[in-house]
Length: 75
Image 1: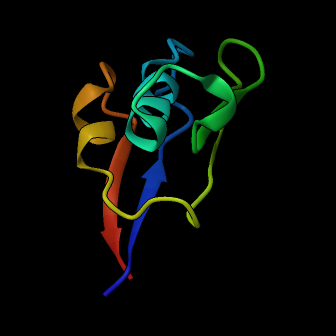
Image 2 (image 1 turned 45 degrees about the vertical axis):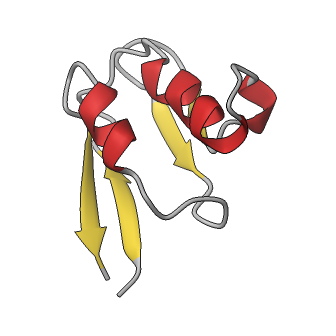
């Protein structure tokens, strides 16, 4: 069964830890251009974009978020 990372944008404070961690998972280095998660917008109205084609194991992303903005959903 495929897994999907579901963001809760209302909880997001825009810290970017998920973006940094996703770049480390993807390329073993901090390169925000290679991150599979992007955060857009302004405080209280952030948009979280996840590129599901690049990654399917999201446990580290769920763990690193200080506001628990993510959950893994089985589809």
